Each structure stands twice: as C-alpha cells, then as structure tokens.
Image (cartoon, rainbow, N blue to C red; front, side, top):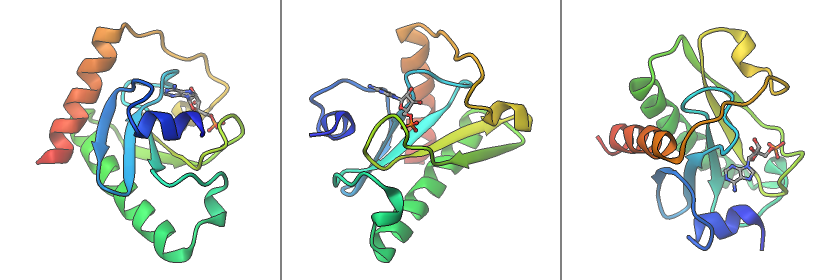
Length: 131
Ligand code: AMP
C-alpha cells in the first residue's frame, strides 16, 4: 500500500483540504508556499498517464475545484499545477498558489510551518471547497 493510499484511508494523518468518494486533497508536508496542496486518486495508481481517460478527466475536474478553493483561501496571481511523481509512486497533482513563476521551482527551500499553521491553512481551503 502506498503512503498516499494510507493517507487517503486515514491510516497516516494528513492536513485534509478536500475530498469526495474518488479523490482526496491534502497539504504537501514540505510546502513551497502556503497552500501547496496535493490531489490524489483514492485508487492506487503510480503514473498519472496510466489512468484511464474518464478517471483522469474526473481527477482533473476535482483538482480544478480544489484550485478554485485554494485561490479563494490564499489570494494569488494563479494556482500553478505540476506533476512530478519522482518521490512517491502514487499519482498526484501539485497545486501551488503562485505570486510569480519562481514559486513553481521545486528546488526552492521548503517552508517550515508549525502543525497549528498547517491545520489552519488546510481548514481555510476545506471551508472554501465546501462552499
Ligand atoms: P513527487 O513524488 O516528486 O511529486 O514528490 C512527492 C511530494 O509529496 C513531495 O513534495 C513531498 O513533500 C510530499 N509528501 C511526501 N510524503 C508526504 C506526506 N506524508 N504528507 C504530505 N506530503 C507528503
């Protein structure tokens, strides 16, 4: 079972931002900026481009809704989207509220946020998503 499956099933804690029966969104534990979120399918699949067209389309639409919630919670120029998947073999979309393209540089040093700050960020996004 992948670490992200364990997260989606609640076996490993996460800062939940949004969910439905098929997909789950939570804060990246090493955020580039406040509001950096990961979106995953509950179904375990490593490579995003191995997903069937229909599932991939629903995944992207779910990620769009999460991006809208992130932008409301954390005003930014745009929410950037990236797929890397070099570290965790469970398909995921990174959503990053951007003030400039520099915010999408995954080699940047990551923010160190307290668990209280992370919980508050996730809560803000969750409330926007639920609206
Ligand atoms: P990549 O597979 O290259 O897209 O990178 C995986 C991402 O998942 C990194 O940005 C990590 O900070 C993030 N990550 C790894 N483990 C966790 C976790 N337990 N909770 C939240 N984010 C995680």
